[in-house]
Image 1 (cartoon, helix red, strand yellow):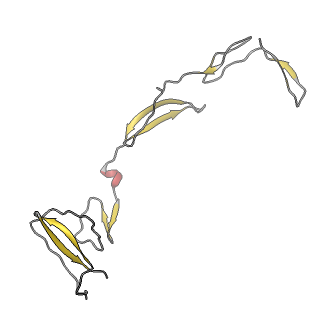
Image 2 (cartoon, rainbow, N blue to C red):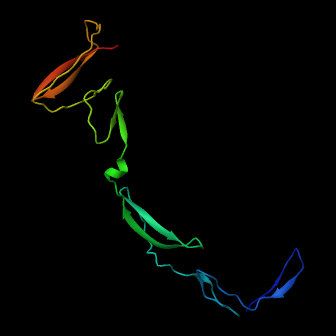
Image 3 (cartoon, helix red, strand yellow):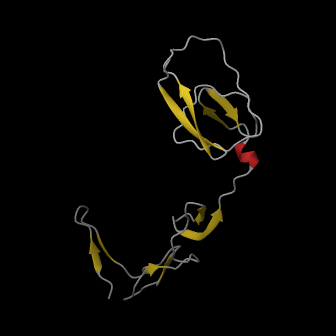
Length: 150
């Protein structure tokens, strides 16, 4: 049975004779007794999205998710256009090549052998004793390259 409602602050009173349900609700109209509940949407209850997949959702005006899907993250060369990385003190644009790198520190490097190699050194004054060595595995042989603290 519907009850009479009184307003404590305003002193007004009245009798509720009909409760209608709006968008996203079901169960109404209620005239004496009943239950109002949220209507189900078309969305499957699940967890959406992973490290490689994002969730794509649609939300209605009442804030309810009305559709949800997993969408693969598309990474193409167009997404990476004009992207670059700084290696040592050299900026390398993705998809390009560089002939020199400066101030690069290698730790635990394992470089594969090449058929030809060249290096250019500027004139400088280096101490006679190196600060340490970089060990590189080259054609199955460990080679030590000295480096100097400058």
